[in-house]
View: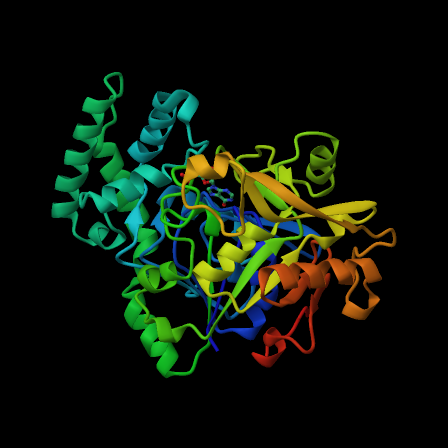
Length: 434
Ligand code: IMP
């Protein structure tokens, strides 16, 4: 079984935890898009790990982790992360595979990201300033530098000198030295070289050998460059389509898709968020959900569960099931609201609008449901959840049209329910915490 696990909202849904706990069911975990703008937080034995570029499967012995061609790789960030794990006693060894076709984030991309945001002024995206957008821009403009190019010093030097020169002309005060960039890249290649390969071929052989693969998404459906709330999006395809293009695998290699969604909604950065709560309830969600960016530390905007947005994610990704996270954050709230449709210029919308101005004009239409007083925190069996929590989950399933097969009730691996009669169980997914 090869399963994709991806974000069904605006990112930060808790994918890191879900991927990490499902990892022992697979042989390979493969990232297909994004870069170190992602921040996948995983707690193991109460110790916190934030994985940015490395697939979350890296915390498990014997699991091969793949960085696909759809990912943009900042070598400096990659090695910082590898060294951090090493300090924590986690060795990478030969468990990492990096696509020779993945594009590199170079120092000038980071500078261009900051410059571009400054120039946009009020219209800024609120990026993570990691150089993600400019690196993908170079890829699409066909002037990018790929991981495999590092092996060919002649053409690499030509491309880097040309790009640095072009960029120094854009930022007048900048005096970036192409030779220094090249020297750093040569050092990176020495370390990275043994991991670099043709990922499409690697995965085809792995499938032939019946090794199972989990495809790990970063960001979320509403941040997808095509299907998200453009222009307030990231620069890659976070949706299921990105799995094929970002790894060089056929659609039929994907046997199932799990969308990860929080039991409420958050967003970091700019752009419309129909269910946003700016008052006391929003603050409460932020505090008890620890809703601060894993990468940038920025406070996340919080709101009620938006069933219109998640239903859209179900459609775009072909979700088979949801993994519903952070249920425990809603513990103790007397009444909850679920957004079931939008009211927009006098009309009722039940489908997520594709146009940003229309989305910005949308008001959420809420349905009130009772909250629960006894905690869900740490509950490990569905039957042990408070009745009203069970009803809340059932209503979300009804509104989004897919079962909530996995429920997360806390940050630890063991604070998870994989429902017995669900599609996840039928796929043979088990909670293996040892
Ligand atoms: P970029 O990906 O750094 O270009 O940022 C573009 C938008 O995506 C900004 O609104 C970011 O806050 C958002 N974003 C990027 N990565 C993540 C993520 O991992 N979680 C949540 N939001 C993200």
